[in-house]
Amino acid sequence: MASWEDRYWTSRDGLKLHYRDYAGPADRPPLVCLHGLTRNTRDFENLAERLAGEWRVIGVDFRGRGGSEHDSESARYMPPVYAADVLQLLDELGVALLHREAVLLTGVEVVDDLEGACVRLVLEPAL
Image 1 (cartoon, helix red, strand yellow):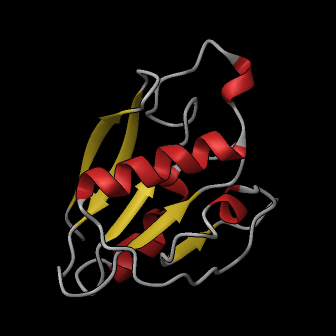
Image 2 (tube, rainbow, N blue to C red):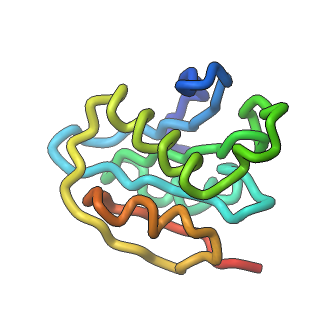
């Protein structure tokens, strides 16, 4: 069983947001797992269990999902806000964004908002 920790960061607008961090080597780019619109990072447990150790796996719960705090302002439940949250987390973790590989593209437009960044992403398919 892979080792992981539930961790949190605070968004720029003050929400406590959750991510799950599976240990992996520092010399490889981490895999960043982004769930679908109504899902959460636990959807990636099986995948993370298989890849952790060989890769660092970071599973993000978007605001209002999983272990992340709900936002009282409904207008902030938008892909550009989700993308800004993810980029803030990666910046705080000191993750060097090396390349982008989208697997199982989802209907959520967060990927488009991350297009300028180069990052390896694992995305859940839209159901």
